[in-house]
Length: 156
Image (cartoon, rainbow, N blue to C red):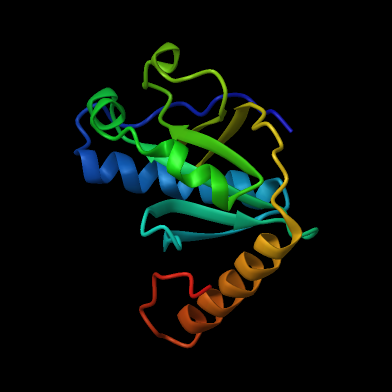
């Protein structure tokens, strides 16, 4: 499951470029772990998950992308995602000061080409009824996007 950390992101990259690279790498890590991911998913509590992924068994995994330490320090809403996933992790670039992140969530270290799951995200299984509602909403959102609709909201 773990692989060597990626080489990094250009230190002159802008915050949006870092976010895009980490997001792209995290999607590739998810795929390698057997998940498929959607970016920019608005949850029923109106919080927007950077990445929400689903496994073949229906396990939901949310990753919050942090492009910089400042981004992490000003955005402390990560706990608001926990009620909508079985696993939660931060996704950061190799240059991110990992010691600043809380130890409870998982950790993905990514660049634009891939990455590694360097700390396993603890499993906290969703209730069956919530899982069913979120899984159906995830599938519907994916279908809308596949048909060309620029949708972001999970309709639960």
